[in-house]
Image 1 (tube, rainbow, N blue to C red):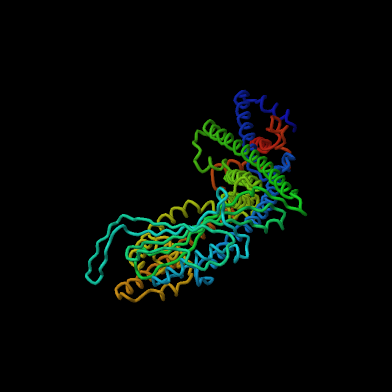
Image 2: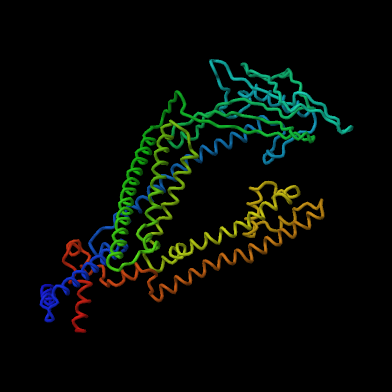
Length: 557
């Protein structure tokens, strides 16, 4: 029977309740129409295409976006790798050039123990600085200010007044710190220095530190091979002789602060800057794709919020119920939020990358964080589309269901973990290198949980104090037993139980919420024709879901 026939039967009720039956039928049609609207909203892209012929533009756009942002990240990573490598190699070169008796791997262990060695090392550094253009194999040069080379500065910090007598167990120290500095200017022709370049007297009894500061410049020419403009680098070098402890050992350390920027005047023959402009054009294309993705995902989030309000009002009017928070959050697609965050980060990183390529700024670290995090979230966002397949969505559903319990469990375990951290730091710190600072303690204990370097942690404990040694055994054994055999096992059990629950729900086909129960009452298939725009606008009520309901009512009557 066609639609008009069914409607006619509803109006010509032999019992005379035509208006009541018509109102009931109309309300039923409204419910079915809204149920169908909800079902379409939660369909996957393939079902939406079968339902309305709607092409999965967001899916295709996300695939394209992942490809272009990955290519962009790899391109920037290779460029950043050259910058990092140039900085690290220069730091190693400076240590070999300016630190006497330096060997690779000994940067943290270099120290002197006599006054003569201190003078010898300082003099060696000054001599190497004055003859640098003659000895370096790089393109290092001195910095110029106003036509003159900037000097090397040697400064010593010491207590203003003081006398120390360990034999008499007496001392008299003025805590005010004074500083004396000497400057040495490089002069052409930078030949070998024969005389003593310094006239320096150190106050070893009161000496805190000696610092040697100077500035060098260099140009990274490796980028020319990859059709990128070279950067000009400025290295602010500081060599520190640390004597704060007055322990008889003065540690020596060299570090540098690096700045790089666009060179003032440059000319590259045999190469075209077109590749650089092509990279900029590619970055602009990436930004446009990301803006489109951001627009589509924002529109979808807005549509979900609007439908949430409609669903809440619908349930309040027709069922007199309040929708629970979990059902309301079903309309807020967390994957879209993730993609929006990813797009914002990647757009910001792409803009910064363009500015870096144009040599306006040199914020490689910030750009790396933005592009790296954005790309990571973009790849994670692919799981949204994997979740539409029943054989692949078990991971996503399990993580989402277990997340609240995992957070509560982690907060409780963190209290015990922090307690062990503070205890290990204050008790074992003086006797074990892995417990010297809170940061190192936390890293060491986390490594123990994962079974990393466990025997070395036990073995490297100093036995200078028997009480502390016995305490360390009790401390380590209880921590390992508690966290590996109990906390970690309970954590795994928590995930496993959630997995089993989700698996049984999928096998039994039980809906997990009122929202899913309401939607499942509509059994129309995506290709049934009930989800087309024309039918949804008002003609499908009696044809689709409601037709089965009405026919069953007629059979019972």
